[in-house]
Length: 599
Image 1 (cartoon, rainbow, N blue to C red):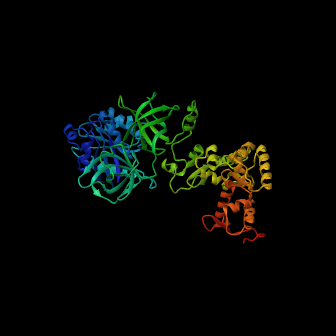
Image 2 (cartoon, one colour):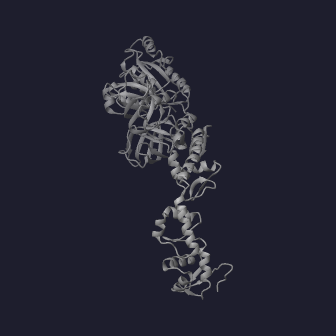
Image 3 (tube, helix red, strand yellow):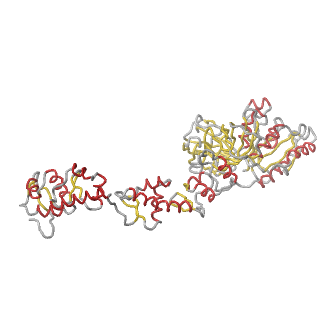
């Protein structure tokens, strides 16, 4: 199927021509037929002599319905520009041509209608004067009369040639259906119609309603009033959806393939054929959507747009900016960036220079160069990278992350420098936590730190954090002196643990004690009770000399200590399997040092 929009001034016979060409009534509303004027979008279709099916979107010509007109032109790849022989080129003809130019619609026909009422050759000559220098400059021209049917067969043949010139959309493009009608059918539920401009939709597919990100299921699919299992762009389709009511979807919404379109609220664009002065508040038209935007000019032809509501957009797409006051098209635009960076104060010029080098064509390597690090899914949703495409040559791929090689090298060098500074500043905890390292280096995912370590010789990540190989915790000089004093005391009296106030007065706080424990110089029995590591074997040795089983009091006297130390120490021996309770008050030794077997 090929989808072609009509364009042209009001009352130049567009709808009449379609009736004669297709035998169908494109005007859906009684008001339209009574007034002889297309108000909303109309649809009709026909089969050409060569077998091609052509569907027409009939857009209103009156300037008061320009929003509806742009909704019809937005998703289509070709247009039939209609000029009446008895009136010639008119104001709305020029406005429709401007819209086609802005949307980069390059394929079309010039149809001189009502050829029975005026000089068709003169009208065609005048029209070509206006078309000079535009994308329609060399367009084929056909004169026709819907009343006498003169020229209809020539028009059909010309439409066949036009259809042959329309390039097929890329099969890799993800589905996006711009909605232009929403209604309910009894027994079926919500139905939406629109032009499928990209991808394909099949019955049973799960799509997303772009405005709310809600999943919807395709129950049934129709194209040109025939039920189909699958429809491929470009096509006019009606979709019966499960999961939506008519209150939740409207013209300008879109149904999209999941994970392939990001909701865009801010974007940088290049303006095309813009007015000399661009207002700060305009209406953005793309597909069937019309969304208010705030415009911030960045360069002579580049701007940042803030959208009133998010739209599913890709880099490189065309759109239109319209002034809602005088109802005129202000500019066309090409989307350059759908996820632009914040602009720092006085950073407008720098960003404008960067945008001046961007073309709007998908450029994975360029995007990675600008962003330094990016999630692969973001590039896919921006329309820059296909889901199954190889990463660009300047990328280091880590899971779903793509990191520019230069950024990767900078991170690696920065990580070595960071852990050295950390170890110097915090000798008792020389390993920096990986999350902290990621935050300080601006790395968006701590798993990237793991990948850096795996590719960096001499770095280790363990329970102590990220550090150089061979680096361990050390105490500051004052704490080291205090620890030596404690070790000397415990060497003399191994089970007389220093009191908490003694530790604090010596300058051994919790971090210093934890460092001493982690380095194997002290053993933490419980909070506030620290002994030498060899105290465990020594305790078992002494306890093994007691008659078995023994009581807590027996053990305390054998160890020469207090209940403060004996109770937690014996519980530690129980957990280690060195002693075992035989009842509530007695224990036996299970394991003793080699030189003192247990009895």
